[in-house]
Length: 365
Image 1: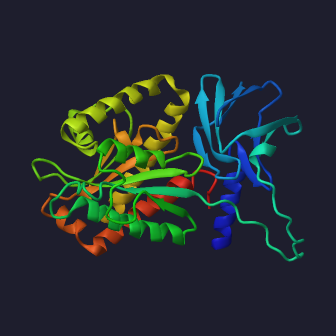
Image 2 (image 1 turned 30 degrees about the vertical axis):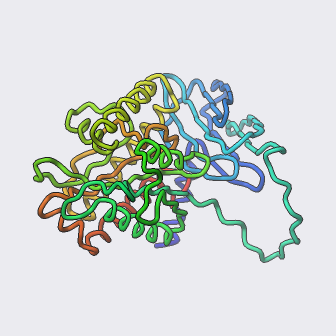
Image 3 (image 1 turned 120 degrees about the horizontal axis):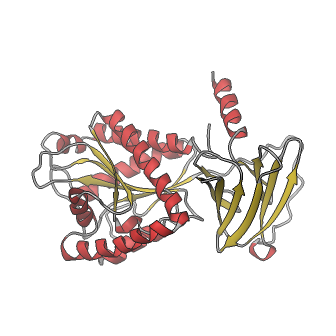
């Protein structure tokens, strides 16, 4: 059964668009084309390579690569063409070759000599040496609040509950071979100034360093009657209830309103930024996947995924979400969130959601 699973995984990768391979010294993208009529253009701006193929169609897809040269590859279908966005880890050299029988385009990406450190001489490997392991995906977990900011206080204190869940999730992810980074690993703030604290958390979500950004929080309502799971991705909040919640997560009061207005101006710019639009779609997919898997693992109702002007997500260049794992002021759900066994279920649900999302990319198993 295990062998069959690996065969199916390899089969799914072989038919990905594009096919991506990490090799010693370069990353290769292979585009299988329907015929000679497909034309392409290639352009580069900073750490982004944009390939536009005219005359074909493909499904929207986000492949997490995390090789030395490439962080991720996003396929964005458009009318009559496909745009492929390759996020780079530094200055690169690009070589393209086109072949026929079968028709395909090969793009090799290597770091420029000035960006590649001189390797130390290595002893010749024995014949029995194993091939190098593929790069591991990197997930950044952000336990919300901390230090001077307790977050919501009900049947649990938010900053304590989310840190405990993040540490449990970290252990589970590492068992799956996934590298995990934390914005905090103890009761601390990154800055006593709320704007600076959120900005520092957001800055850690560097697309050249991590593949996913997940901020973990506990929810609350004035009525103390709501329960369930909600997940947010960056975008303009359409619902007044969501906007109120966004203001609270952005610091509450005057500071929350000011940071929300600042985030709203960024959300407006997404409408004209094709790269940001693509990342927003993948963030929405991540939000939906995490919400449903978390609900299934805990039995807590899934209330939906929503766009929100969240300051901590505003500049993320990787799929990024804020997860509300439950309502800490609800008399039933709040007590559950205080239970270590229930927190294990929360961590397990988040793990399943992350693995499901990554399985749709270059780390399919």
